[in-house]
Image (cartoon, rainbow, N blue to C red; front, top):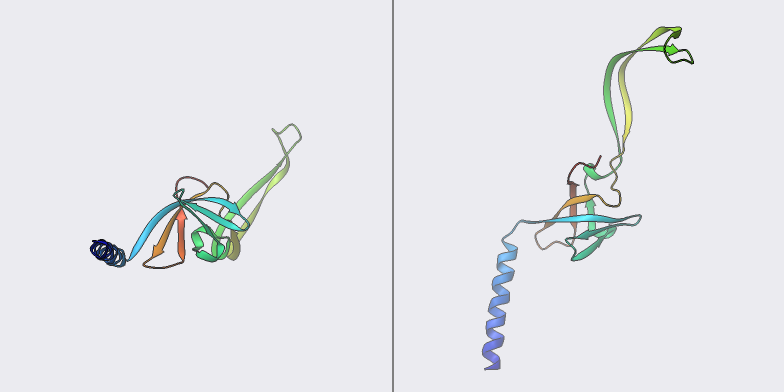
Length: 132
């Protein structure tokens, strides 16, 4: 009877493995528990470290170039905050500028994580909710 039980368990495992391999991706939810080194607690079941994570631009600091075209108008107020101490002046700003986008994950951020089929790497796709 032991051989029959082993055979049944082997068939069950093969069936589970086949089912899992038919899924192209698994979606998980996690929370950042450490920033340096980066660690994410996934559904209270496992902690993923930096070596297991692939970060998208949605969750990292990065430089980007933007085109700007606007005019500012500033006036200098007197110490009482009500009267103009100097006439307003205008700054015309046009062209392209480089900006640092501050998107790095912070402790407490909740994230969406994707795991490729049979993969050991996890893609941190984005934050959940209204932080930032």
